[in-house]
Amino acid sequence: MLTVTEAAAEAITALTADQGTGSEESGLRFALQSMEGDGAQLALSVAPAPEDGDRIVGADGGAKVFLEPQAAALLDDKVLDVQQDDTGDVAFAVLPQQQSA
Image (tube, rainbow, N blue to C red; front, side, top):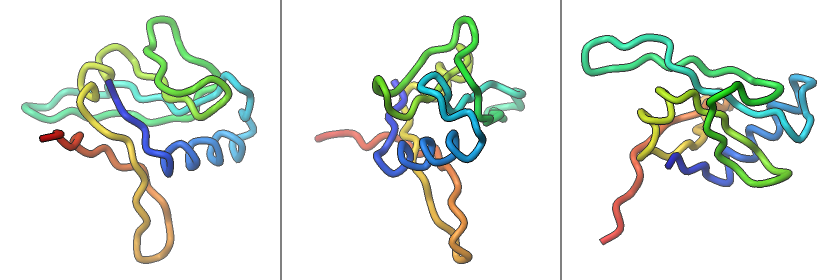
């Protein structure tokens, strides 16, 4: 299942509050946009609530991520994190999970 880092959870909470959807039900939603060869394009949006069939990742009262079923399958073994660029802008990053030895 997708793992959300603490930094990403804080960014999601801030983003949903900034979007005016800061209810306890709002979250960040991943949906499959297209499949091209071995790669997939995912759409990312702030959603006021999960859609039917979405898998919900996150804690009660905390940041939530909604995964459309096909996106959930693609992100099953990934980590959602945030990275800051040289200008200080923050972007979400999907990284491979670290395998424990």
